[in-house]
Image (tube, rainbow, N blue to C red; front, side, top):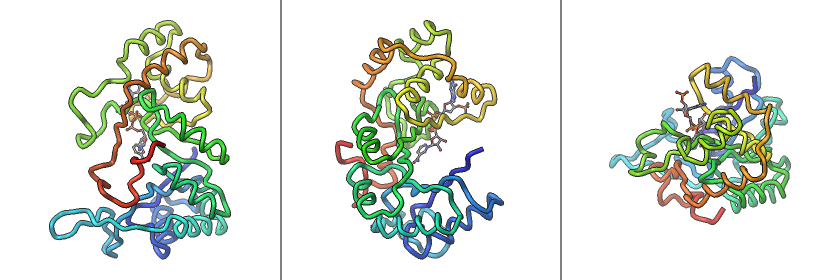
Length: 248
Ligand SMILES: NC(=O)c1ccc[n+]([C@@H]2O[C@H](COP(=O)([O-])OP(=O)(O)OC[C@H]3O[C@@H](n4cnc5c(N)ncnc54)[C@H](OP(=O)(O)O)[C@@H]3O)[C@@H](O)[C@H]2O)c1
């Protein structure tokens, strides 16, 4: 078991970081977690009423700009205190990550971002690698049952792509296993979510085969469809720290 949890967007202010982790530890009934992540570079106001999605009277989310370095210094203190083994970030772009790295005592161990064949994140992966940061892929299967706010008409279905099905047949593996193997083979950690025991097992069984270069190249063609499923616009459109406006 490797336990990861995240710092909520309304808890990124200096005073809130340590108590927020402690609340998570209490709920998990643990003394430490393996990894603690800053959930995103954009934050919300802490209203002191327990709300993680604070809204004003008109129902708008209450955005807040937090200096990522100040938040990061609090994260570093958690490592010093033995409350977390490692610290990292999520949904940071290269500019935001560079700012943290230039001012960090402890370099983020990972950046957890959306990665799949429609959004392979080549440039961000290169950037992270050059800083000694790993990439962790969320939605590696293309988030087939994502929430309504992330659904768009005519969205492509990654697990049903013809090339994925063809390669799966060639290796005697499932489409999910091909997509996961493709990412793992690039040295990226994957987080396939499943609440189905048989799929959890299936998603682990990807270390007994290797995709040939020709198949890796064929899968890379899917990149042309360029689709980010989790654009996070409903929660951060117009936020000064919204991350997905730069190239990577
Ligand atoms: N850091 C962030 O901001 C962030 C944002 C989004 C997501 N995430 C995390 O990333 C993880 C994955 O994201 P996600 O759930 O959106 O996308 P995903 O892992 O690409 O897709 C999960 C969906 O695929 C199904 N599935 C799993 N294994 C399968 C298989 N072998 N064959 C067919 N279908 C399969 C699951 O169904 P069943 O459960 O019914 O098996 C589930 O509906 C989650 O744990 C999530 O918390 C993080």
